[in-house]
Length: 87
Image (tube, rainbow, N blue to C red; front, side):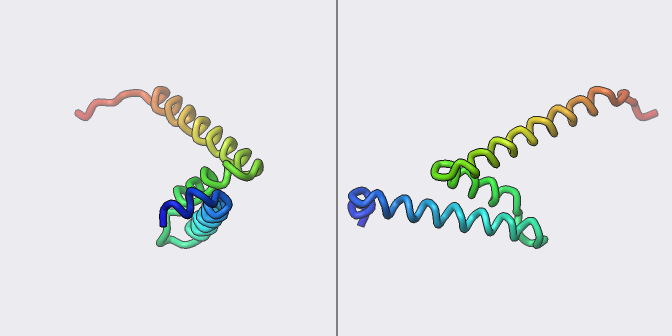
């Protein structure tokens, strides 16, 4: 069973693409539905699809930049707030 997939790399590519698309669609649905965590599924789908599609690689790069920007803003906001002690 495992030897068949090692011998046929086209099957692995097809399964990887199908899995990536499934996770991406599940992630997009999760952004609309309150039951599913959409962002982690969408990111997982983009990570898988980035190997085969340049648009997915670009979207993943933009998502990483957004995360870095949000982290910097959060750190700046935390450092700008004065420390208060309870009395």
